Image (cartoon, rainbow, N blue to C red; front, side):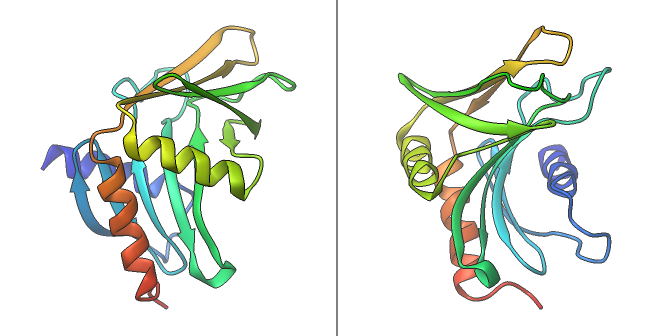
Length: 164
């Protein structure tokens, strides 16, 4: 039950309007699947996401049926990144360059989203890193156990249409 509460708090951190509380679809390993009024998403937090000097980090893969967007990746750091710093995503032995601003990172386009989600489905471990505004390394590590199932559960929930 602690893990579900943990993920529900994470889901709330994805900037959902107050009136659109997320609905839990399921918990799969280290990942949870949720939906709200406009989207469905799989989400996880790194084990050390509660930081004294910042917010909560997460990794998410979302579908927005109303925008015709599927499998969009999004990473949040606990603190804002240094402007101009690269954001690197590593999944096992593959590396992806992300774009980012503030405390967020995304794939540069839909093709990169698809390649990242494919790597997540078969991967074991994932890390995302960049430099903080003070120049220090920020790195979040994620276990990928359950990610594929959570991504699929979110996609299936949105295939039936998000709540309106």
